[in-house]
Length: 503
Image (tube, rainbow, N blue to C red):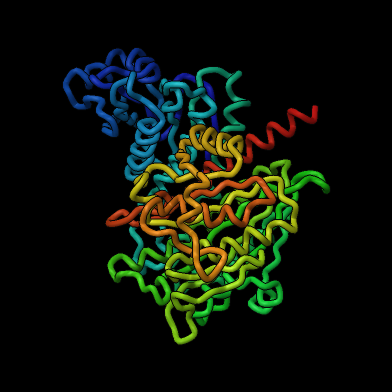
């Protein structure tokens, strides 16, 4: 998909389709009003007839509009102007992209970035137009023998801006949007793959391919024997029930100075989670292929950062394994020694994500990271607490938490902070080991983060629980690619602050 920006009046665009917004009730946006004036009131007459009310997501395709040079005009309902926020703006963009893809236009000029979105400037609206369009057109069809593809799909979208002086900032916004969209697409593709394809070894291969695409990246993969020598007893305990060999994938991106400490991203990579001996219920167990979406988000974020050539050093660490029952599987009641030397009594083998992450977090210490963020589909309790709209956030460093929350708001990929108080640590007590791997039903998301916090005392750390946001369920089942936009925005702001401080 090709995106460009251009200044100019909508009636002068020689294109297959011009896209403009209409507010409710039947009130043209500024771009639509310019088209109406050029057409001698044609659009106004159509709206007065009631063909389009302007309700959010409505579309109406007009042919041969007088006074214009385009083949067609697509009117898109935007709802009430004062209610047009980030979420509704995204819905408008998605509705337009889907309709354009259906009508065989192949290319179009969209003036939707001119819409007034509360608190958002033009480059932000341009960037979101790129990301939302790519999201709307995404299809995962690798395993369909006869995929349903439009005969003439949308291939090029020009985003109209009011003035020529807006072009440089908006061209940069397009580049950022395309990089984020590429990262999201990679994360979605990996998440949507079936678990018989996306194994720990496959994830390692994808990391190697990413490093091959970008000269600033390099990859190292630790095998089972390496983990045994290191003493990663928690990670290896999870892998014992599977015939697939576990992998610890270490992907570095070197965009900063040689001595600059990296920002580390640690992604949970359980490529299928049956729960181990603590077997999950059969209903919707197929969705446990998505338990590696934290790993997918790490790879997607590094893909976006490498495309943008961010002046930062990044470290991606992915502990990858399956969690299956078997004759050699870890049992409830087993005690393991982690890489940190701390011991864990495993009371529930389905609380496996924190076990593989704790060894990966300890492994990060040797790189002297500036900041560590782990990303994991960790607890069903997070879905109960926050639903599927917000990612759960906990941190041992309040300024880092504030950075991530702000990045989520900017990227329209929001997170919500939960407490990480010392009182919750009491729930992890074990009479036989340094800690248990579960803390009971109450505050399950928080106690899971409290477990991880015991392995993060040497660095600034944040935990993102994406159990509710990493994929959609039911008929719309699909990986979302979240929180790649949040993480990329966080890195963009880190890079901007570093460049500003070096001047």
